[in-house]
Image (cartoon, rainbow, N blue to C red; front, side, top):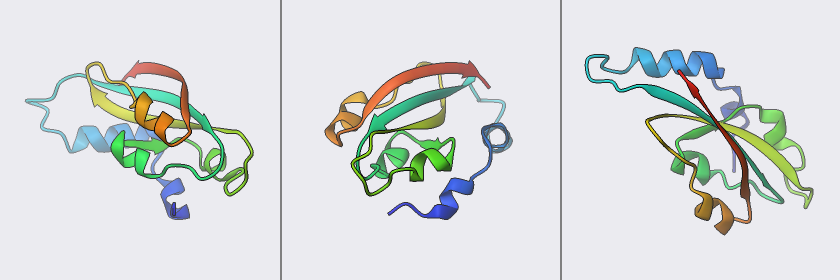
Length: 106
């Protein structure tokens, strides 16, 4: 089960700073923030956060409707090098779907 303390992770701006501070800048490639939305019902597939190396942007999206069959949308972010995409097929295997994606420079 998702731990509520995970919802209070650093904001995307501070998460970017965290990644940059811990990177060897001599070897670092350009980083991008990938924001995407997933939509589904029932239990959120928490393991997908690990699989996509992502975090929940807003915990209220995550908790709203948890344990019900209410359709909900959760906004996620991930920081990666170069071109990256969420694992569409794996999200689908859990009954959740990636509905939109956006990329920003870090």
